[in-house]
Length: 291
Image (cartoon, rainbow, N blue to C red):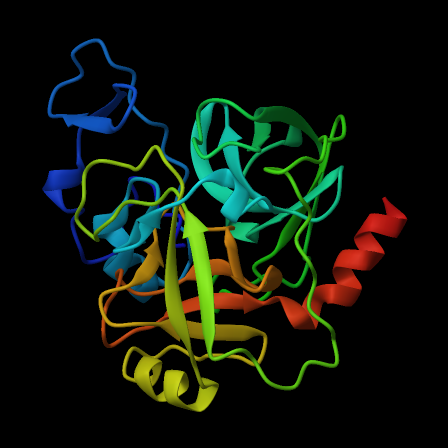
């Protein structure tokens, strides 16, 4: 959620605790104040052109987190993938079929050939199956100020092989009128809003559905609107976060949402906001058939 790498936004300095260089030591990314011969993480830009969203997310400028979740094996989220740009882990993603994956539009900021997808592993950097991306089809209606229509489909150069850790997600019925009361969200995200070490192993957390009317009231004071094509979900001290973006919000293996945005992480005043996938099933199917 909230892809916001090293960004600065109007009127607010970046949290100094985030400036520096990250080094992968095999279990965590460690933060160093000086380069120490470590290449800096590239700046992928702001998640949103809305300065309010960015200002509140500035402290989360390095990828990924599930807050207060638990580590899970790949068999518990076999549709989960990790998305990498020039070898850097940037987002989560979801297996739709053998050659298509779904992610958040804001995870798409460069040409297809610079992206790779790893599936079938509980580690975002090792194991499983690694595939190169051939084509990206993103929702043209995406708006980086309102964060509406935050979806992109990525076509792989070669198909993935299904197995116990690699399975397509089930798409929701467009006739669904009621959402489940509880969801699970998974990813490799940081485990608190100011954490400096990124998780290597896949984690999952259970959160509760929040009615749009209630969510709308909560975000109104921030001047932000919750549209019908969004879903809100949270639970006290539990959430998804930076770097979980593009990952799945599911119930019983059915994909209801894609991690999109929010203010802070596990912030009691602001639930996590997800793309309402039910509204985009026709588009997803159209992309698969057309391309």
